[in-house]
Length: 206
Length: 206
Image (cartoon, rainbow over all chains, first blue to last red; front, side):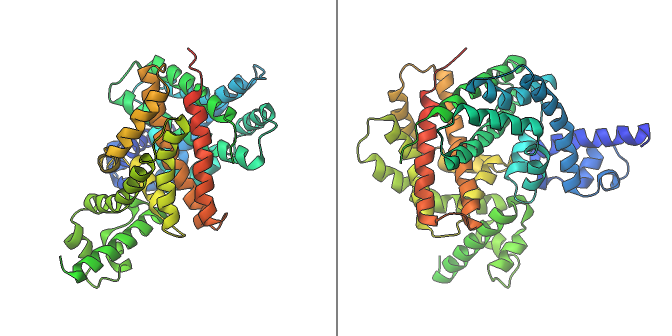
């Protein structure tokens, strides 16, 4: 790929992520993205990415790599406690978002993609198959050996929902001018680790 | 409104909710809804509801009234414990969905509306202003007097996210043939009450 094609792709990715986060993934046309990316040619998105689904996949991949590296680094520290494993679910995304500066759009974008029936598979394929995530979930399970399998599966699902949607809400608040950006993400990750620890340690009633 | 207009409105509401839940609110046109509702006239949605936003609002209202009545009834029993108040957040929606038979579409529809920037205000206005919800949140707060205000606000937000998105995931699983419908909703509500109790009782670390 030429440098120029690479630069155009990057401009499209940035414009698409922002427009998707602010207006809704399905509400934004490839033509609007091409225009926002400064492309004279309205078909630039199609030319560089193909379908909307492939553009969404490219945006997810752009962030997933960095989050994966941050999680690998955190896993390398060695863990034994429930809170450490939960930290591996929460902090890498928060650190990645903090590193992007303010405002960010990825958390809102990702929450929408996960909720949107036609796009859900993209984020599942690109993020839930991560090796570091699998190691984290396995580590978490070892901390709670008595938990029935179906409760474990249910709490895993809820944990994923909490992380994804709470990050999106926090991003929305930060973009709207609430709180201090850097501290905001660290605090959010800490507060989420607290509630997730409570969630996992909660007694199971029948 | 004539009986016939009323019946047409109802057919449109049912068709719209299903199409929205399955394909995404912004991916479905008013024309497709008119067709699915058996209306020869493609502009039937516009005639009966106006904009998409007003149609979304009408779908939300149709369910919100029943959930509100179920919550009022549960509040009438008198409560003192944290789990009772959490039950008032979880069971009314679960009971409403169980009463609709299988499949339902409202939980997936509502989760999308909440995540969609252009529609979010509709569900906030129509459901988060409920008097019974305000009483429930106040009751919950009285059970945890030592919790700092900002932690309380944060846990309230996360609770709302968990209820909304976990119900949507459960609905998706039930629609796909997983589990026993009736028991499914009761079990889901019980499991959510467990994790929410853990979430609210979790110690706050700094």
